[in-house]
Length: 181
Image (cartoon, rainbow, N blue to C red; front, top):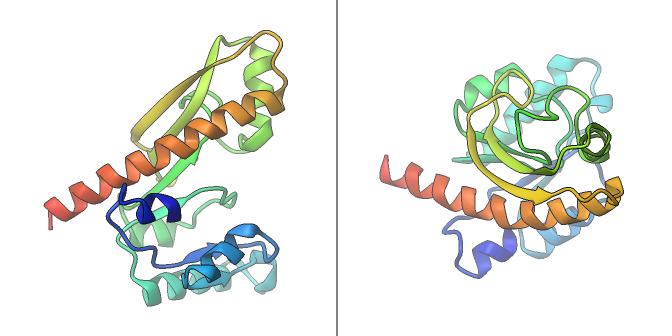
């Protein structure tokens, strides 16, 4: 997203980065670009409500117009979905509705696609709803699945398409938000 904004492909500002991991490159990159960050680990809170409130408080402070999930593996709490209706999007490494739902993330998706013997997979950007991977689809990119593919090889090819698709969808989404304001 940083690159797409700097290259003028997306007219936006990144309000902040929330992660549950303190040792990821994205944090370093965000700090380098003066993007606010927050590391919120569910295990650091005494209960689910405390974690949800920390998420809400951080988002309220940053006031994003759009929330983009990319590598965020926790189910988004209902309170967040209700506070930002139709304004949370996710990128998923399959052609939804195939290989979506609880437990279907990362390499698990690619293993399942290869095991099932599909000829194509890909990635999907969709609106986040209260049901895993079932929100309206905003865009998809297809990738051929070769008989000789390993899950890792398929993952690499799909990731390349994710890096193309996500900025395209975000750019369109933001244009629509701005034209409806």
